[in-house]
Length: 383
Image 1: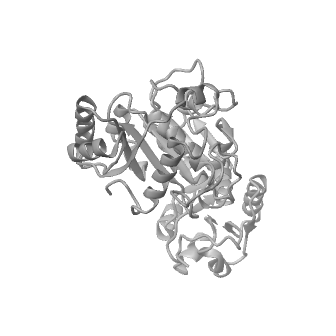
Image 2: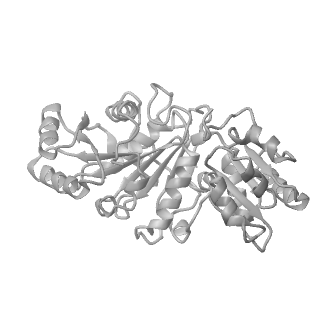
Image 3: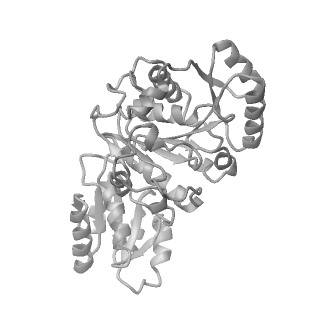
């Protein structure tokens, strides 16, 4: 087993400390998060669960002895302590490959989020509930395997390309296969919650989160946003300012969304996509374009702005011949050409979302996009 693999048969949280008070404090935090904990008394015993735990919390009192045992490097290791932080704590953290040193109780909320995330299956991978508007799971695709969720960004090659419609369709189809979150980063768009029929659902919006910075809990995010079944959406709520959220808030949301969902689809305004801050957190980037001289010229300018920072894939709303022309004009590999769907506006107005029937044009296209992305390798972005 690799050091970063989580063994679901073992408790997701490993706690190592000889400080009885610190151990009890951590156990209470874990109980509040609904997480099982293994708390061996000796560092040697801790090594048996070291690789399989989803999260490791090491008291600074036990860290020096653990360092002497040279455990394998792994992710999700944190040192914990009462204040004041011991002088040698950061040296031990570096030797263990720990991410940070957390002093309690000041960092209780942070540790609680870490524990809650560790208690969940990777990528929020529950058996599909079928509550997504697209219905049955269908073919395997992006996010269908256990592991961290996949984050797909979608941007328009030109105005009126239908980005929000495709994002919503991907969300509806993806939610039939597992937890899916739609993230709206187009402040001048129609609002993803309206397009998928979740505008009457309670939940937080960007105006509630854009002041946050740092780590955000996956479960906290998933439970806070407007949601129906396995489909959630984060956008601007009615009456809120529609400014692009600061990069720190966007980064925290996308990181938490990846941990708590199988699929995350981001509706990108062109200025957001070309700004560069969000690109580092995307696994795939789709450029949606329409046939025509002016849309093609606009798409070429967008691709030029992304040059060297992203390797997008092209989705064309039009016939295959027009799609081939756009592929040659932009130099972007064509992922799919798709036809327009009749009755789209009526379906959205009825609160049903764009995918009214799985066998409609959009339902088939969204399913094919997700399936094709799954076989195109680990990333649609340059390293």
